[in-house]
Length: 461
Ligand SMILES: Cc1cc2nc3c(=O)[nH]c(=O)nc-3n(C[C@H](O)[C@H](O)[C@H](O)COP(=O)(O)OP(=O)(O)OC[C@H]3O[C@@H](n4cnc5c(N)ncnc54)[C@H](O)[C@@H]3O)c2cc1C
View 1 (tube, rainbow, N blue to C red):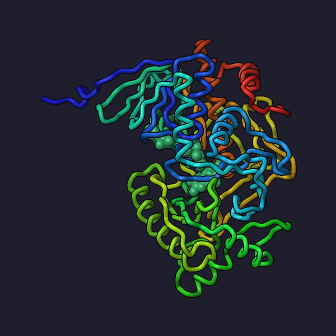
View 2: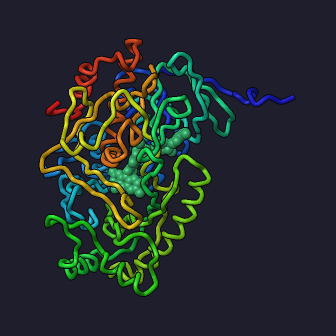
View 3: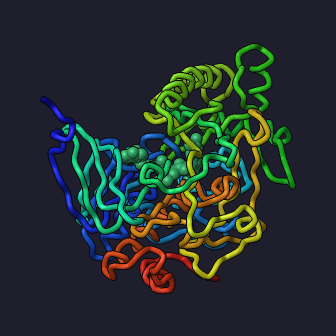
């Protein structure tokens, strides 16, 4: 006789458990540990960083308001960036102008991005977690939950050792896809509500790029930029149209996202477009990764043949995880709407502020994007309630899958806001643990006070 329950080989007990070690999960774990509770972080890969490392997504999108005057996202995001800058693994965002090689020559919404080195991020973020006493468990996937009376008692996880269970006082779902919330029975919507999700992209990095030749090409084409309201929106489309006419390009993209990294000759390429992928479906992810690699091959060949400065480029690596922009959005105690974002509304119970633009790929068809930037200097707040799934007492959700309309999620899905959400969730979980209270009973003003002490910018709240 054999029963799979016999495979439960371990049991862990902690105060706060975070599932998912991406940008949100790193900050949730650090913030909870800073508040003095026992923290465990579970991650399916052998390193942290999520899309920033496994997906090779870079740079960190802007952490400033749209005029570039005020740094809005500080706290743990700033700590991580400063530690990386100190090691030459990131460049100071205040020194990065737009348009520039670091922004793929795009102006709008891209002022003060942060170029960084993904390999260094793995180690530096990991050390931030270890120094704080966070128990890391890599190579481990969340499987399921035991839920009783609106409360998660324990979760089932799986790794090479077999199955294990983890009991905790508070659970934070930072999986990007709300895996824990969904499988625990929380309500959620998918994509735009009709199941349509933003397209996927497989990032890749190239080396041996000649910056001076790229800059010369940009200068020669300065009148060819696609511009709206006087600012650059697209770059290198002058080469894409030539390649399409010659039969060397059949992708649903009209331009190239070519972002210079920390090293002058190493650039990130964000150009592939894989439609109709569901990031919560393994078969769909498999199809997307296969299609992504074919697209990477086509884009790389195009760069070498058509883009001056890339003639001798080398393909360094592609993401080990397909870039997923959108899947589930939980239904929370409150929901961030696109109107909130565009009006620059700052609710009283905001736990972070941001000015990131609404960025929806393939919104009106495969070839089109929607990119809406806030008026100069404006920013919006995100309520604590967006991280609290309705009908759950001890579960928080941070990162791109918080309770938000699809268009609003198109704004806060970038890494700096996801990190700010993670920090807020970590502090909230610690307060809930210490006070033995439900998420909905948490004093948001107390949470805000702790966040302010932790260098979180909440001006205007
Ligand atoms: C193509 C593309 C381009 C982008 N461009 C930019 C950009 O230029 N700048 C920017 O700032 N942002 C950009 N973004 C957005 C950004 O990278 C992500 O939205 C952001 O990383 C989300 O953070 P997160 O922590 O919520 O989730 P993720 O980064 O997805 O992290 C989730 C983590 O959870 C782990 N995990 C998931 N499920 C499980 C499970 N069941 N068990 C255990 N572990 C699990 C994953 O391995 C991962 O480490 C881009 C995204 C994409 C896809």
